[in-house]
Image 1 (cartoon, helix red, strand yellow):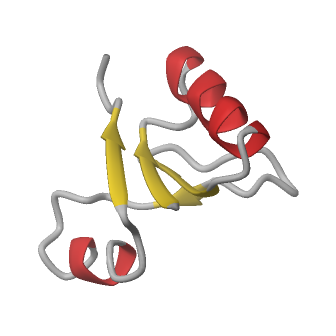
Image 2 (cartoon, rainbow, N blue to C red; image 1 turned 90 degrees about the vertical axis):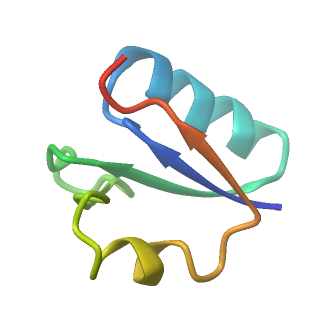
Image 3 (cartoon, rainbow, N blue to C red; image 1 turned 180 degrees about the vertical axis):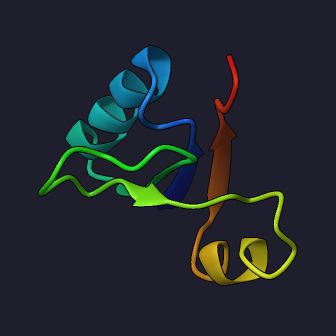
Length: 68
């Protein structure tokens, strides 16, 4: 399953991404903040109506952890 995780740069989001990956899921990690160099984190503002459809095109589930 491909899972979009918002808020992936945060404490909870990063743990959720690691666990999803460990369980064999594809993870698209997004956050408003850019990740560390070499990170798989994709900076994305999903409030932008032009960004959300493109980011969500190939995902089966969303875990929304932004701003928690």
